[in-house]
Length: 57
Image (cartoon, rainbow, N blue to C red; front, side):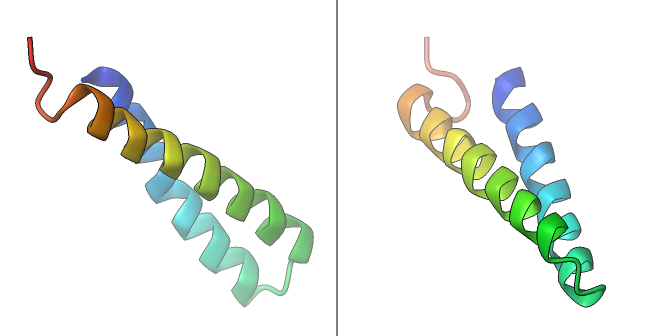
């Protein structure tokens, strides 16, 4: 459960970072923010699908 929360928070922060770097036309920052968004977003979704939300015992 805690892992999903951490992955979700990182994903939300990556969204804000991606939008901000696009506004400032910082392409390298946008690239890394998008990579973080893709990886941690995927981990968050797959952790929820695999373990359930809330965690099923």
